Amino acid sequence: MLLILAMMLSCAKLDAQNREWGERSIGGVFSPKAVGFNALFLRPNKHFSSFDLTVDMSGLTEGDSVKPGIKAAFHHDIPLFERDCNGFPLCIYAGPGVVAGYVHDKVSLKYGFMAGLSCNAGVRFGMWHHVTIAVEWQLDLAFILEGESTVSIYKAGLTHSYWPFLNLSYEF
Image (cartoon, rainbow, N blue to C red; front, top):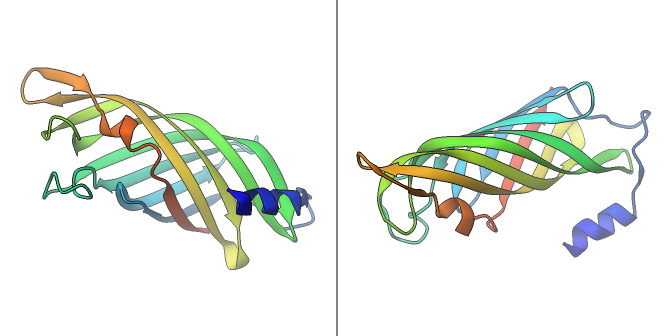
């Protein structure tokens, strides 16, 4: 966090003459809780939409499960703070979204279909040759259907929200 604060303080306000964000990007998502692909689309109002398709690792990292799940998430992110760092853009963002998948729940130790609301917040930094790196946190408030009739809160979406995602992507 101190590194992010130092980067923000040493940067000037975003200027149109310097490197701008690409209109879209694709890349990889890496975290102790998920690994997968990410697509990002810049909107005309500088907001951006992101779509993640990941292999859900909840339960695997704790040793509670031997099979991963699958999860998809869509977020509409709003820039809260933008700066230019020596020609490279920096953006702090947050936004609402939705999430769904077939996953393993932490407490019940069962698999089931999960769907609900999601929100994320992160820091995105544009680097050389249209490469972007982002660190992001995601909170999922969702329900999981286990078996034929058992519906409960998806607890891994709440308890694993402090685990960050690292997103490496290429803009074009």
